[in-house]
Length: 294
Image 1 (cartoon, rainbow, N blue to C red):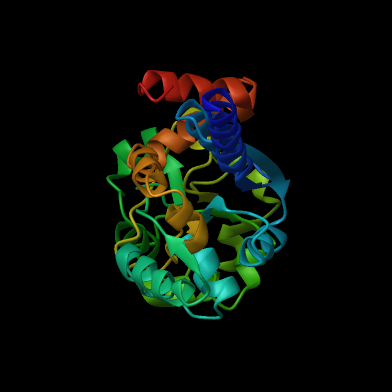
Image 2 (cartoon, rainbow, N blue to C red):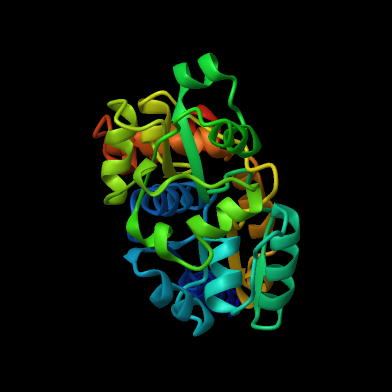
């Protein structure tokens, strides 16, 4: 009888463990380098902590967000500006990084989505110059840049056609910083060509994404947006509320990872993939090992 009870108890315990392990965490990711690095990093990190993880990377932004709202994705890294503007139809113009975060956190809470601690990585639009040009001119902010343009110093720009034409793009940027560049001083081209044009000294200033790996690789310096014109796109882990309830330590673990990320870190990681051609999984693994998270 005792043997039978022992067997039954063992079977029940095994069933409980199997059930617990079946409740895996589905980690999502978008279809560009930075997001692929983050989805790999998150998966490896959580698996190392003992979580059962399934990775679904390479998804389109809108599809990924919808999948999370529908409960098909438990966790992924989102940008505050993207969620506020695209998914909540709210303006982020003029808001600080923290104001953007607090606003989207409140709105998404109503949808069962929890924004954890934001990282210091803010992948927004930015204007950049070559480091040697910054040292030579002393231009470090967009206000400095506006002053140089207004002093007729012949500053030339490169940007994609979308930013040049959009309602929250080039024209309002000039209005906010009170300068006006001549039409002939602005070259419109594909985003990827902007980096080459700036590197090859075909222009003085280029429109970039703040965590792009080519910024450190090409020795660019991002100019400070001292009037908060560009919307904040703080990189933040977003988790379903139900997932957090089932995994009480998950928030603490993800906040630890978030605290290690900033623009320089993400730019360097992106460059390892896009410039050095290091495999994504290895870049993510090396980062975790370097920070004693794996």
